[in-house]
Image 1 (cartoon, rainbow, N blue to C red):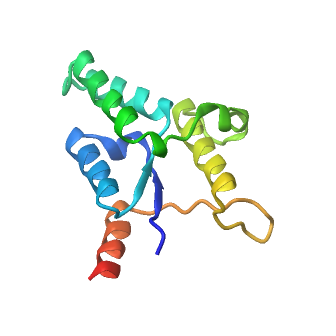
Image 2: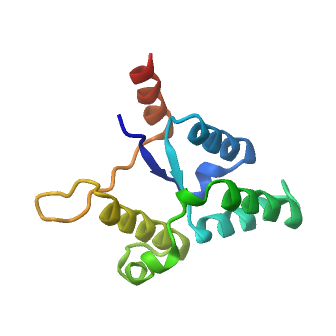
Length: 136
């Protein structure tokens, strides 16, 4: 069974312990977490603003993600033209949605009958519960 690809929103990677878990699960072959520079930059801003990490500590974490998970990057140039067409008022969310949509197009995710890429949104507890049940 191919590993599920997961493109998360920044709030899923907060606090750091959850981010660490998500990438550890990638290392263990449970899923492949995808990231963009925009996602990591937003994570840095949020975790520093909350006072949970210093600027240098947050930058070190995202540098480690970039170094050890390069195959999981969704490059900005691959989805930049989709951002303006994404719904919503939060510019960060529109970037994340565009990255998810581009990755579907490039990776052979299923299409609906209207030939529009299908994005599946799951509650993380449900998703990981399903993953554990499959592996038991």
